[in-house]
Every structure is written in C-alpha cells, then in structure tokens.
Image (cartoon, one colour):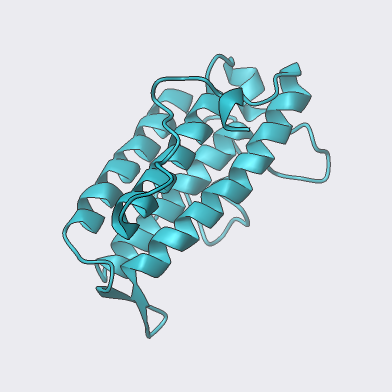
Amino acid sequence: MVDDLDDPRRVEPAFEADERTMLEAWLDFHRITLLLKCEGLDRVALVARPVASSKLSLHGLVRHMAEVERNWFARVLLRQPDLAPLFYDPEIEDSELVPLEHADWFQDLATWQDECERSRESAARFPLEYTGLRRGQECSLRWIHVHMIEEYARHNGHADLIREMIDGTVGA
C-alpha cells in the first residue's frame, strides 16, 4: 500500500495529469521507494541475501538499478552503446549483485542517485516520441519510462520481501 511508506520524499502521483508528468512521477515514486526500503540498515543487513537460492540483496539491487538507469537513459536514449558499465563485469555473472564484500554502500548509493539524476536530465531533453536505439531497433522514451517503472516495481517487490526477512519491517 502507498501509505506503508509514509515519507515526504515519496509522493503518490496525481490521479489526473498529462502523460509525461504521470510517467515521470511514477518513476520517481519507485526510485524513492527503493531508497526507503534500504534506509535504517547497517552494512551487514544491506548485503544480506536472506533467500538462499537468490543473489539479491538490497545493496545489490541499488547497484543493479544504477546499471539499469545507465543502460536505458544513456546507452539507449542517448545512443551511447559503448558507455562503460558501473559495476557489471561480463566475466562475472551477476557482478552488479555479487560479490559485495569490498563494496562501499555510500559510494554505490551516490552512484545510483547520480545515475537517476542523469536519467532525469537526459529524458527532459526529448519528447516522449523521441527514439533511442536498442540492439538496432528504435525505442521511444515513452517505452523506456514504462519499462523503468515496471523494472523498479518488480525489484521493489523483491526489496520489500528482503527487508521483511531481514528485520520484519514491511513497507520500509
């Protein structure tokens, strides 16, 4: 429920708004949701992987979403396919998720927040109809926004379950 995360930084999007305003508001809503699900935890909890069969942790999800932001708004929208990854190493499967033994939470959080801001700035330059290029196919900014909302919503569900397993907190 929206009320589960009562924080002034997290604003439910208006029920009526123009398309762009609504897409941007929902994307920011989900960005803030991920942040709130990570707040108040120590390093041990942030890197915890409470589901034995999964590589997911809250810290890993933040790193993953930094990569996702960079991919869709820089590589695809801005057509910068050769932009270096932030955490991903093609030699290591799921390298943005693990290992995290030497990862710096505050640095990685700042990296994700910087990527979110760059994404906002990049998107603001173009109409929703503008197309970037993904794997040789045109891809509209509208599609990118919808996909990013879906990506965050899915991973926020993971984050909610991880947080609940770590400290019993639901919704934060």
